[in-house]
Amino acid sequence: MSDGPPGLRRVDDTCWEIPAGAREDMRVPARVFADAELLEQIAADRSLEQLQNVATLPGIREAALAMPDIHQGYGFLVGGVAATEPPGGVISPGGVGYDINCGVRLLALPLTAEELGARTEPLVHEISRRVPVGTGRAHGGLRLGGGELDRVLAHGPRILLAEHGIGTAEDVAHTESEGCLEGADPAAVSERARARGADQLGTLGSGNHFLEVQRVARIADAATAEAFGLREGQVTVLIHSGSRGLGHQVCTDHVRRMDAALRRHAITLPDRQLACAPLSSPEARAYLAAMAAAANFAWANRATLAHRVRQAVAQVLGRDAAGATRQVYDVAHNVAKLEEHGGRTLCVHRKGATRAFPPGSPDVPAAYRDAGQPVFIPGSMGTSSFVLAGRPGAMERSFGTTCHGAGRRMSRTGAKRQITGAELRRQLTAQGIVVRCPSNAGLAEEAPFAYKDVERVVAVVERAGLAARVAQLVPLGVVKG
Amino acid sequence: MAYRWVDHTAELELHVEAVTDEGVFEDALRALAELVGEGHRRDHVDYDVSLVAADRATLLAGWLDELVFRAEVEGLVPEAVERLELGDDRLAATIRGHRGEPRHLVKGVTYHRLAFDRDGDRVHACVVLDV
Image (cartoon, rainbow over all chains, first blue to last red; front, top):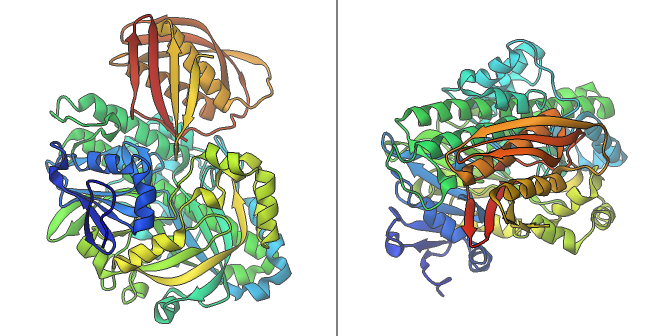
């Protein structure tokens, strides 16, 4: 086996390591899951330097980890995992990112793409009519009165079910952490964060957030697919969004607060955006309470988006079809959680990385416990997405974590230099994909070639034993901001 | 113009060069106006901003953060600085802008590679935005 870029030691077929001794300030090694081609792309930007910076965090355990979809971020790279141990180990808001609980929800419709047929375009169009998209203040977000926002922040989508009839009890059960992180405290969410998020519940946002109508093109694991309620040819809807402006502001507030307290905690960092505080500190407790509230808001946001999709299904395909539209699962890929690993309680930061617990885990819904936790890996417009299931290797090697997507490899400007939105729209339409996106520039920024090869990313996590392929989904239509 | 945007994989890096510290803040506002401005202008609105921070670099991040917040929540699109009083750790300003629908979402103003340095007769600053 050939070595990778200088400074990297090959551990095995899918894992490379930068030893802890590579830099004086590293406390643990830095490990990357990749193949040779992905590693070459990864080494082309500053991701590996940023991964080494993460390895300097106080209280970090075992290794700073990077998934194969890793790319350069600001402070904490995208596609990174860090587990820190209380009480002295730290929590870093930058290790979660601005879009707290950005994540993916998959709905399965009770019909095949063949049965959907000519109603594909009306369905995508109706979804685009009902789901507000775009930047900033949203028109059409769910209006919350009185103390409703506080209850959403404290309890997540179960409050929307109880008070607004949004979603189902099965939806809540089929959501990571049942859509509610413990310790969420609405009082920890600032007025500025509330102002940014107040009218954004049920809105998609912009950038790489999207909603896709898909067809199950291939089943790779029939037993697990059956457990997830997926069959070949079936229509699915994938929803990718997060906590919108509310989460962005929570991150901003707490990076500022922790940065100001670094000297008091005697913490020195190679990058200010890694600002952090010991898990036992008031700063950490305040962030955990606010982050959990923002995560609950994000789950409520995706629940509201799913409700709007069901309304569109009812309009185009009938009420029975809407009633039989099941939520397969909902996973976060920007969050920090206290979890048990190797007999220790650790704070696992996942930024652009997905929890992937294996069969038998008590944190996996009862219906899926023998199959493993569902994981969704969105591709990019025009390419496949994948349904995976968590595997034991994730607990052994990556704190129960796998990748989250294809991973960007090109800047937005770079993408726009290569293709116009109008041309990309023509190409996608020629492939039979219905596109609803009000912004040509926004469309071009998310061109498929701006991302890594999602199939290659999935192949690495599969070979590494972190997750296994269950089904491949191909796009029929896309709604974007 | 004395600013330039550098586009990275998932973020935008703003470089500003000015003769004075005040000029950095004025040019940073112009840069953000270019990013969020939506092309058509409606009635002008003047609005005030006041900030306190530990140092000039942190103050610059706070300045952009405030402009992003006002743009997203109040639809205030900045155009120019009308008045700027800059202290070592504080800032008070009146901004001329207009109400509109800002076109570009900025998730956050980061501290990654944040810099505000004097080099001879010029001041250089750098701020990275998550977009």
